[in-house]
Length: 340
Ligand code: PEP
Ligand code: MN
Image 1: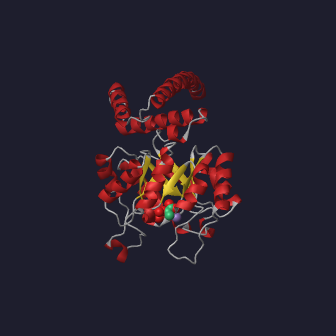
Image 2 (image 1 turned 45 degrees about the vertical axis):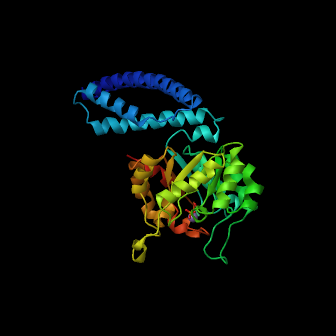
Image 3 (image 1 turned 90 degrees about the vertical axis):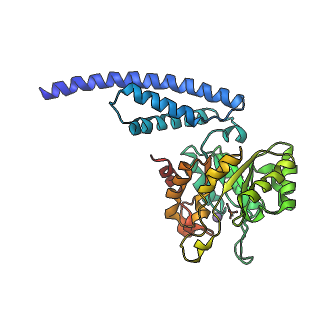
């Protein structure tokens, strides 16, 4: 008896699922069309106020049958599936177009160590829909006698790994000579924390990138005020490129006297910067904590504070990493950041 009833109800469920999935497919098409129009007309692809309104409206429609947090959880995943599906169907999107889709996720090793290492990491990240692969070829090391990166060879490995996985590259450039030599190869140029106040270099970065408005990631100097940070961005802007992404990466405070943290995560600065500038603000939970098990929670905190994206250090074998293994997470852990 019970079995028959269950079978009958299951039939009903199957029919309902059919309707849900058909409607979901239609919703995907409409939302992809909206994203396409927004990108074509230079609007930010994400509109969190609109997302909130959708959730509010559905909550009302449910008339108390489902808590708001549940509807939020369901719809946040629908929003994110729609964006991912748009990205995967539109393989011809340029980095500039992709950067309009929030969150901007950049992940990869601190330093490129070998062809195999970077390809393994890239494949894993690409399988999660991540489009921006970071990897240091030229490393700014405190100790001149330590491993400085593989240089141009490392950059080639990064480029190949990205190309094989339909990803774009983010790599740091340390000086003018490297800039001239490698500018064309890299999709997004990173100016590191230590170079944030190298004004001559910032001018050169702005000048060379003025021609094609290539995105520049500018990392906050770890002893720089927000005003100094924004003025450093102005150096690049005044030289002709306003396509700048600000990256917070932790600052040095008295906390470093006895805290385990490598730097102090400047999460509050996300809120402050968002009120001062239109530029996207991303957060680096890896350097700002220096401890791999703190990376996911701090990344979540940065998201909650309104960061436009994250730059995360990943490694498939953190224990064997040549630099910063202690703050690297496994590629699949990036997903944990987005678990509601
Ligand atoms: C990096 O991102 O590789 C790096 C060296 O970071 P920072 O310049 O913030 O120290
Ligand atoms: Mn690093």
